[in-house]
Length: 74
Image (tube, rainbow, N blue to C red; front, side, top):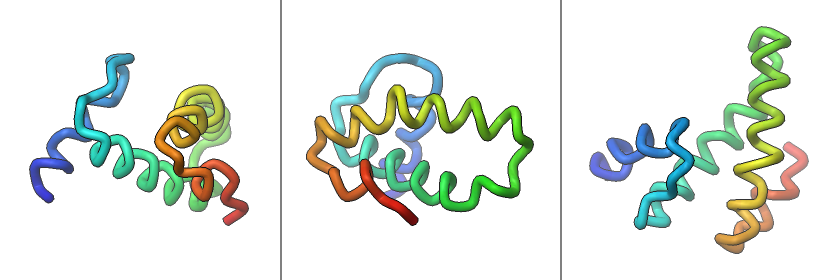
């Protein structure tokens, strides 16, 4: 498990996907949690994170077959 967590930074800002889909899934579930608690974040950062989520992570969830994450209402 520690190796998967160590792989998370590889996703941030590189534009490349790691070969290990488990890392992508961890990133998606981490972002889902972050979006559920985003009310405590600065408004400008909320907009940026929301845009990134919709443009990058939601399509990734679709590709991985994680529709539950894609359409989660909290």
